[in-house]
Length: 101
Image (spheres, rainbow, N blue to C red):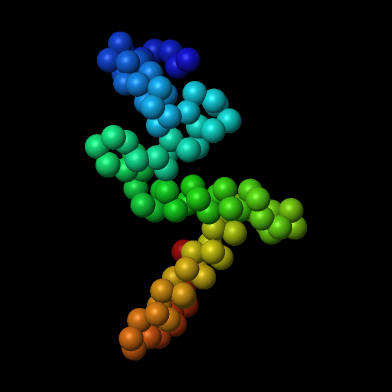
């Protein structure tokens, strides 16, 4: 149970846990960021949800077992997603090289 919550916040948390929206199991806390609440508003932005999903994919991937760190995996997968979407356009956009920081 979380401490230092107002009674109102504690009640909302308990309601969410009862509805399976915010898992009580600490090993599944990452899920609450990707769950939609009852008013159908995301609890996290689309980019945060995509990053969370890619993190879970990386955790289960052979690339992780091969030594690739999470940030490198994220950047590579985002480049693949962007390239796939770029190619789906009519006419396709030209390929752009990423800018150095």
